[in-house]
Length: 81
Image 1 (cartoon, rainbow, N blue to C red):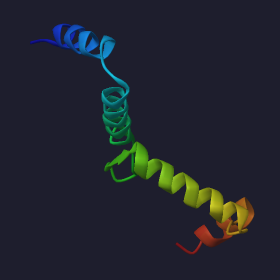
Image 2: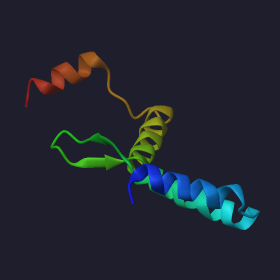
Image 3: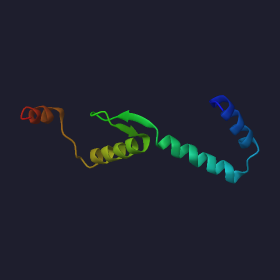
Image 4: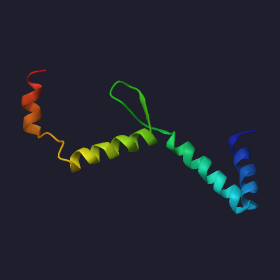
């Protein structure tokens, strides 16, 4: 069964589904989306949506807590690399 046939078959189930089944389907879709690869690290490793969100939240927290470095300081620091 191809993607088109699967989609049609699933839509038939969804059109007559009760609230419980719809919640299960929604949870499965959301879980699937969280596993979606949305980026790659500098060394080429895939990053899922969930990991990306975690890293973004950590970065925002660093900014909020003042754990940042200015462009000028970074350039000075990089001279010693």
